[in-house]
Length: 352
Ligand code: ATP
Ligand code: MG
Ligand code: MG
Image (cartoon, rainbow, N blue to C red; front, side):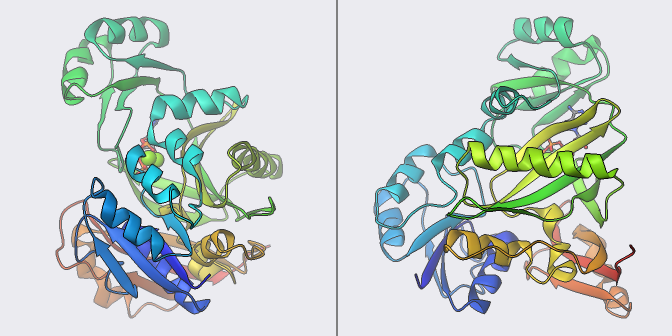
């Protein structure tokens, strides 16, 4: 089990590679684009498009286990990866469920979990019917490929319907009712090959313009909400026969916890674990996919994680002078507005 293959060359792949290296593994990245943050730190890289099945098969043959940091891998590419001898963890079911917001919502609702009310929207007529059923305000989201709030349009009233539909550019979409949440939290949960489950403490997430800004731990939750959050994450993992780390995004409402979405990979809102736990989410994921026992998820410190987005990078010299501030920079060559360039974990002794 000495080479871990990682599909996706972004910052998550980079931090997974660091964790894998610490456990004595080598990593091999697959990504259609060269020069990503993970490529700089991995032991080997394959740069090829997802429809280059020969390259995918060679990559798979070079790895002992395959995982991913990017869930939008085309189904045919996954089939090629699965055709080799190395197991793909987490498996196809988790990918297919989280790639499509409609499949994801149906899955979650099927488990008896609460989601925002939703309807599928492929046309103006569908949207009118969905608005009748759900009401406004609401959010129209493309079913596939959205992240950081991209591929979404908010509707304050039915008058916004035409503009929202145009923003989907013809892609299949779903309409979600707007959830009146008090705040957002997420559970970073892990499941090992033997089925053991371990969760990190839920973090409280602040978004701006659809992008995660900060995660604070501990989150404002009652002990029963905390228990609910962890139990529902465990249910999701078990139902998918999941192996690895997953991010489960939740809305906190007076009517209970509502599941927003799941990510079948390490998650931005779990970056605090790098400086708040003995075993962080990246090591936890490597442990899970490599068949190791899981870390216990225990938090030794309180942490505020702040993403460094675009020009936030100008603050690095000043942040570097702060006490208790751990910087994690992704080595991206080019700074762009809205681009995640790094993050900083501000660490405090654990309260209570
Ligand atoms: P990510 O980068 O987390 O994958 P994404 O593009 O998949 O983001 P969502 O998580 O669906 O987008 O939405 C981004 C944010 O928009 C949420 O964290 C939340 O703040 C807000 N949001 C999304 N859906 C709803 C909803 N139904 N009701 C209220 N707010 C919502
Ligand atoms: Mg998402
Ligand atoms: Mg999200």
